Structure formats: structure tokens, C-alpha cells
Image 1 (cartoon, protein in one colour):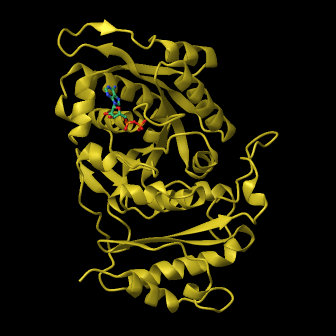
Image 2 (spheres, rainbow, N blue to C red):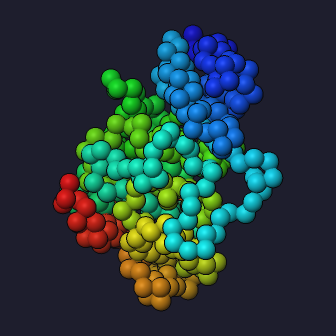
Image 3 (cartoon, rainbow, N blue to C red):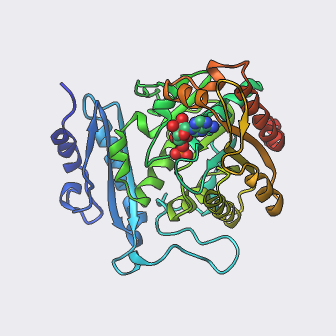
Length: 375
Ligand code: ADP
């Protein structure tokens, strides 16, 4: 029989909160998701008390993992501001690197820099980001990861697009990650990539209702509680947008660089500009802009049509002084291969699209050379 919510609650009733009352009576638990032996919930506390709650979070996770039948337990600590402060607008610090917001999951006693500690065995973590959803960020992240693989690099992909994790669909992965002896999740190996997605653990509609702080906490754990092994590059498919959650994420993940995906339309370029500004704010170098759905390529005759006014991202990149990494056409086979779980670089390795992704990969690799070779 599968694990029940009651079993999880029974285990949590034996964990004490800082005031001594049972965790289940402290009024801090989010709804508990139990899905095929995977348990996920958050402990929501006042930011001022976050530090003392971190050990409770760890104890809760240990207690739940000890329940028979539980294969994965992820407990997020979400530190909310006090009512009143909660409605404050996203921080716009006057200068320098912004203060880390109260959204950040506390990790007891560490300095701000150590939150950015490198991930052991991983030479370079890079973010693939977009100012808004639907521009092809996830498709590009996966195909870029495959392009980097084709260049002989050891590559991982973390789907941190927690609001709509699409990597399970794009890769056709339906199995759940197992735990190793250190109780770290083992990423799923597919197409020669080490892949992890929150979508392996929870249903897509569960993820949709997550709030910012919970997102951050979950992603931090996915970075650190996964046995990534030795990787040259870990590609992080970021949640779309440039809000507070994304900013906090960019701040907390030890990024060597970021890639912005944009379509040629003006609106999307404005969003891309916001993305650039966001990474600048947190001192993450922007490795470049990719123009996706750049031009329409007829699947029958191969004719190119610039239906969106192609070239906008290239000009924008020039204007802003960041590298332009390449143009990916709007092509039916990029979509159909994605939908089939067999990305185009994998299924049509000798085709023109794979060559484009590999060329973008080569530009990215060249910029990361120092980090990769140093490892
Ligand atoms: P995002 O991650 O930005 O929300 P997705 O990668 O999920 O976007 O892509 C959105 C949709 O667009 C998907 O159906 C995907 O297959 C399709 N798509 C992405 N890039 C291309 C492209 N270059 N040509 C054709 N379809 C694409």
C-alpha cells in the first residue's frame, strides 16, 4: 500500500517545533503532497525566526524519510515577511548587489557568499532564462544541453521551471528518481544528460500553485540534494520572468553565466532586456542572447520568411554589448520532436537545427572555457 498523508502527519507529530509544541500543532505546515512515495510540503514561518526553524525542517525531512514506503521527502522552509511588509514591492536596491530578500530559504549560520557555494563536481552552472513564458526557453535549454554534449562535455539539465516543468514531456521521462546511499536523488540519465526536474516529483498542477519562497527553497534543494556526479556544465532551465523569485534564484545559484532566450517580437525583447538587467543586478555575466522562432522556415520548400521581423535580438544584443549567440528558426520539426520527447538534436543529429544548437553550444563553451578547464 502507498504512503498516506496520515502516516506523514503521524511522523511529523513526533517532531518538535522551537517552542516545544508538535510540528503538526504549530500552524506552520502547508498542505502535504504525497505522490507515489514522494512527499513534498513546506513549513511557513516568520522570516525573523527562520534560522531556528532550519533544524526543524531538517528533522521533519528525516522523520518523513523514515516512514516506510517514502522514497523522496522534500521539505521547504519558506520564510515570509510579517503581514504589512509582505506587500512591499520587489526590492530595487539603490546600488550594488541587492540585499537578499526574506524570500531566501535560510540555511542556518552561513554567510551570504556560502549560499552560492559551488556544487561539488560541477564546473559551471549556467542559467537559461526568458523574460516571459512561451518563447521556447525549455526547448532551447534542452537542445543546447544536447549541443554541449555533442561537443564532448559532460552535461546536466536542471528543470527549475517550477511553475510549469516541461522537461518530463520534452524528454519523455516518466520514471521517478531513486535515492543513493547518501539519500541524494540520482538524476535520470537520458540522451547522455543527467536530468532532474521538479516535474519528476510532483504533478504539474501542484507546482502551479507554489508561491515564490517555496519555489526558491525547492530549487536550492534540487541543486544540492541531487547526486550530480562530475559535470562540465549544468544547464538550469529557469522559471520564466524577471520577478522577485527569479531574482532570488539568480542570486542563490552559483551561476557562471546566463543565456537569455527571446523571440524577435518587440514585446519579448523588452522582456529580454529586463532579464539582462536582472542578471546584471546580481553580477552574473550574460553569455548572450538567442533569438528563437527567429524566422519561419517552410518544412516543404525550406524557404525562409521573416514573419516576426527577424534580427531584433541581434541588434538588441549589439546595442547592449552582449554576445549574440544565434538564431533558431520556427520550424515544425523542432516542435514535433519536442512534443514526442525526442528533442531535435537527438532525433535529427545531422539536420540543420542540430547544427544551429551545436554552434550556439560552441559559443557558450568558449565563454566557459576557463571554468571547465580549471575543474
Ligand atoms: P517556454 O519554456 O519558453 O515556455 P517551450 O520551450 O515550452 O517554451 O516552447 C513553447 C512551445 O513552442 C512548445 O510547443 C515548443 O515545442 C514550441 N517551440 C519552441 N521553440 C520552437 C521553434 N524554434 N520552432 C517551433 N516550435 C518551437
